[in-house]
Amino acid sequence: MKFSKSQKLYELGLVNLVGAVNSPVRAFASVGGNPLFIKKAKGSKIIDVDGNKYVDLVLSYGPMVLGHRHKKVQKAIHKALKNGYSFGASTENEIILAKIVCDAFSGMDKVRFVNSGTEAVLSGIRLARAFTGKDKIIKFSGCYHGHQDALLVAAGSGLATLSLPGSLGVPEGAVKNTLISEYNNLESVKKHFEKHDDIAGVIIEPICGNMGVAIPQNNFLIELKDFLESKGALLIADEVMTGFRSKFGGAQELLGVTADITCLGKVIGGGFPVGAYGARNEIMEKVAPLGGMYQAGTLSGNPIAMAGGISTLTELKRQNPYKKFEEIGAILEVILSETAKKYQVELVVNRFGSMMNPFFTKSQVTNFKEAQTSDTKKFAVFFWEMIKNGVFLPPSQFEAWFLSSAISEKDMKIFANAADKALLAVSQMEN
Ligand SMILES: *Cc1c(COP(=O)(O)O)cnc(C)c1O
Image (cartoon, rainbow, N blue to C red):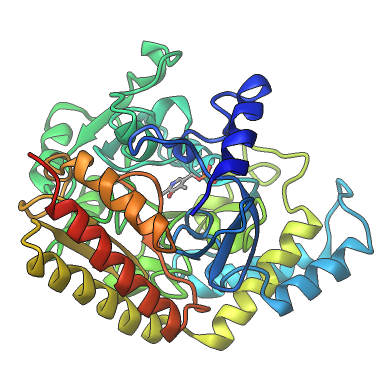
């Protein structure tokens, strides 16, 4: 497998782009080598500029749930393009997408569209503060909620890969109202409430994907919601990754919890920049123009992005691939576990529906501290062998892999073969 054209573009990219990437998670900092440049993608496959073809388990970090360039989505986009790209005024499609989203989430009467997950969350946090009149927010270490100042502490994802505790350029004042708790540890939440009486709410990835996959244990989420209700604080579900992926109604539907505020992104745009935040009427009525919380966007509700979202969600609902995701996910999980056993590699596989990833550790992984016991050197060797054998993965131990509904039996064979080679290579590493 050759990467010479990617290499050349990488060197060119370094001149006017930062590290030749527009998001640090795309850099290959923790796996070595240089990032691949992509030419195109179709269905379950992605093709780089050297013509190498991979089964894509990155899927743009989640959005491409139907696989790439689904016919119906492409048709909807082409149709929308003919009418214009942006108007700075309302269109019917915004109402249609809003209804699809509100119907899917029981806690959402109204929704506001924005342009990214980051925007959705920063607006959701502002809304929690506006509604409660309180300032403090609790987040869990290892959960990532986009790159807004206030939540860029103990934030998993790219920060974990780059081993950064937080970010330069975030003033102390911006995080003084952010409290950190441990995922799956209700006591660590209660502790903050004993000390502070100005907590607006708790933000959580109901199924965490940004320390790698971590799953709420027992009734963690339900108990958390009950506790918050008793304190008059809000539960803010960051379903940017899990919304329409865990289930059409997101992780909340599966886990039997209704959040006060829900943040969405990724899948709802089907590959176009769409984010959203929503809640019951009483809360959303705080948002301008109905209420005093200001939040705006020149391109929000963009007609092309709305067409991408509507067509993706409509097709997703028709396909209802969640049972298929569960079955295929379970098979890939078994392949990884069995192959690891065969080569005596210590490996823990976490999976929730179509989100999964292996950790190179023997510890269970239910929080960030446990995730960090993983051997990232082993992951790097594993990663490159998977690439060389035709499977495109996120270049980090601490990112979730995703399935699309376009994945085929043949793709799974490619995966099994690659996993065998990759875990053999890991087993042959010198300690
Ligand atoms: C990706 C992600 C975000 C940020 O979304 P962007 O569109 O990258 O700004 C926020 N929260 C979670 C849980 C995410 O996975």
